[in-house]
Image (tube, rainbow, N blue to C red; front, side, top):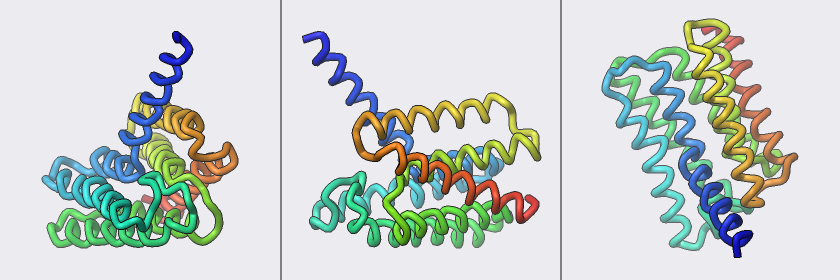
Length: 197
């Protein structure tokens, strides 16, 4: 009985971590961390978290996807296309508000490249891409700007927690998670380094 309770708690915790650190959440954390409080926080939240989740639930209701985690690689094209378009719309609206910075272009472009990679090449973890990108952003900020060591450590802890959660739910193999984290990290870090931000 005790073992059953522990398994239930473990599964619940893994699901909470999965939903709390949805790939869009990681994008929002990146924007909030590097963008001064200029009023676009809610816009980012709407386009990077709320609307993508709404898209997933609508597609689920229309039977276009079998699960909101999109385990089936064949079902990923439409959700990835729509969420990428929402991210680009967010970028356009932020640009119209006059608060756009080069790093935001790079961050969105990196997200688009990472999303296309997971759809075109192989089934890799979108959650892994999200935490890998966030860690890459934090590492770049720590090495080149005044981002604190605490934030870098927090990004690493989030990455470990998400990795554990996705494995606990048997959503991905180690290979798929490592590929996701590596893709997100490399695309983000290399693009920031290349643009010299």
